[in-house]
Length: 376
Ligand code: PEP
Ligand code: MG
Image (cartoon, rainbow, N blue to C red; front, side, top):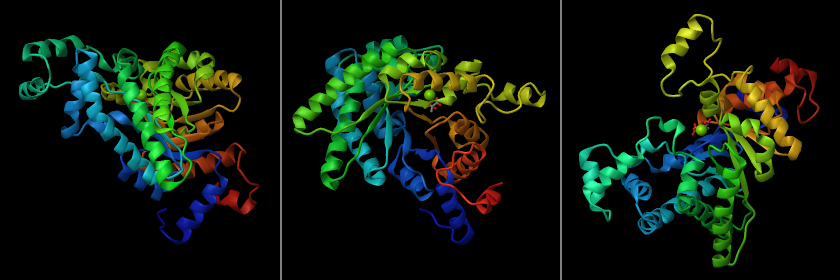
């Protein structure tokens, strides 16, 4: 852990004694994970696997995986990606040891991965089994007017289950290897993005569980793991009781929940949101601080419905609000198990979690009046 010495260390020691919610981090690389650990993170709440593929030397395999027009062609691309993904996960496990790590299956808005430049399209065509003209047609077919509401998250997994299977295999093979190398216990958490109906979760769970069974048979070893879901579509929040039947945990994607709840684009609404704030229509930017009145209600309903089915359901947050003190206070009020934020926000999130625990009287240990005074 980072030590700044003296009063900072003393304060953070108190903070960890007092806070009730765990503080995890959003990290996609071993470097980010290391940084967050130094800041006191207690696990990873979100690995965005799509971020692992933006690098130039990797993006072409993802493009081939998505643009393939046959299962065989897609499997060729996936077989190239599998060892790379496995190594990515292994390296993250190496940093995190036995701490919890939640890996989210691919959630790429497709437009971020499609080649646009003529030279990229030609280069890609040379590695695929179809002509340049056919490739262009395929790109055109996959074009979406509104990709953030399009073929992303679990929808991609349902269309191309082999992608989810490859990722589940990479997660489990890396975990089994790590367990054997270190002789330790880890329980991978696999998270499904953009669920709006329990049937999506049932479908994709069956696919990945079948693949994991194959891995266990091949390796002659097993490992316990959890499959949970993002709650980031309003319909998922409203039907959370059904979803809880299938989910081992919920993690709120408050970025998308805010986008879809307000109908404000995450990418384009900056201009008018500042106008709304200037004119007093909005008190805070809803993508910075959770809107308790509307979006917060969706979160509250989802937790209430989810815990009616599973009273001990683990509930976390991995949207940007997980690093915002005012939002953190609200998440404590609703009974969250953990919050997850970017590495550099971990210390502030720990502090905010401790203050919220005191405010809502959920501190872990009885604490002295002196300590309460220090936090007030
Ligand atoms: C979210 O929607 O809040 C979330 C964490 O997912 P992403 O930001 O990757 O869409
Ligand atoms: Mg999201």
